[in-house]
Structures are given as structure tokens and as C-alpha cells.
Length: 259
Image (cartoon, rainbow, N blue to C red):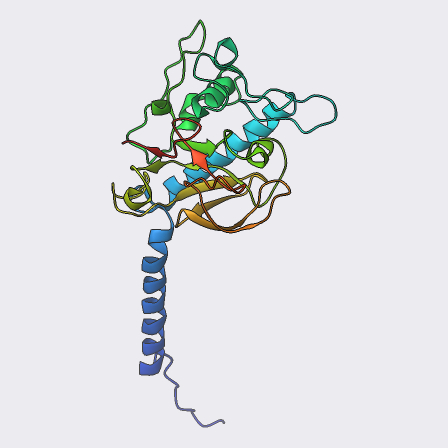
């Protein structure tokens, strides 16, 4: 017969518990650090993801529009420009929402063509923008900058910037993003940050349909057409001597909007 063997106690040692505690502390710290990166001060990560999905959807709709807005074998242009790349004048073709350089005109053209619905134009974190009401019958009413949350690439500056307003699939050219609020760079904010905080953050979509949640309005290594790379590029400040990112919200030359 075998002699009885002593029983072994199975459980956590003090070292095991300390290790688990350290892991939990690290996880909590990582979550607290990551939270400001996802959603800022309003709505959280899910709202920020929804916003970026809308931005990508708007850009995808622009690309679809462009595929039937071209002449010859050239790439098609996004709404606001005709098939030759010329600005569409204010009138019936833009729903009297401004000429083609005005972001509202581009948005009207997309609504009129049923490329997306009005709620797609409003950032879910933007409490100061109201959805355009479209009647059951009759024409789509004019769009104003109060009806959408997003800034679009300016079409009034460098020719290369306007040339990027088409299905170019450029990975380094921001073409749309959350609007900038304030009166200038010192007063900048966004729908995610406090008014006049000097802090802008928000969604941005490049011309290859990739999107990101930027923590600063200064991007690096942007490029438009065959022009030189911009090592640093403020999304909301125009450099007249360069082809750079310049996102506008209310008209072709105004980056900042009131709240």
C-alpha cells in the first residue's frame, strides 16, 4: 500500500495578487489616457466613430457623384465643379445655395441627387447645427451653413487645391473635416471642445477615403496634386503661396464659423 501523500493547497500567493493588481492599475491608466483621444468631451468613442463614418460616407458619395461628372477620359469632379473643373454658378444647379465654391452648394447637390440624407450632414456631437427639413413633395430648399457640421476643401485658392476636388485617391490630401469654431487660430475650438479653448480636434477624411480623429488642426506631410509636400499644414489657415489644406465651412474663404 502507498503511504498517504500530503495535500497541496492550490491558491493565490501574495505575489500573484500583487501582479494582478499591477495589471489592473495599468489597464485603468491606459483607459484614462486613451479616453480624450476618442470622442473628446462630448459623446464618447461611439459618437466619434459615428461622425467619422458619416464623413467617409459623404466622401464616398462625392466619388460616386464624380463618376458621372466628367468629360473625356479625365477623373470626375466632386459637386460644385462641372465636368471640366469649372465652378458652377449660383442658380438652379446649386439650388440657389451659392456658387460651387460654397460648401452649402455642394451639400445641396448631394441632397438633390439622393446621394445621402440630411441627417448625414450633422455631426451627432454638434448641438448647434440643425437638420434640413425636406418636404415630401417639391424641390429641396436651399442649404445654409446652419444645416451641416463639416468643412470642405476650399475651391477658391491654388489651382492644385481645386484640382484635388475629384476622385484622385490621394492619400495625403485632406478634403473634409469637422468645422472650426471661433474667429481665428487663437480662438479655435470644435464641436468636441470648449468655445475659445484654443483646442481643435475632430474627424478628417482624406481623398483616398481614409478617415482619422485628429487631436490637432496642424497636419504633417499633406500634398495636393504634383505640388511639393507641406511638412506642417494648418487645416484652417490658407497659404496663398502653396497648395495646402484649407477647409472652409461658410464660404470659399472663411474657415472659422460662429457658434
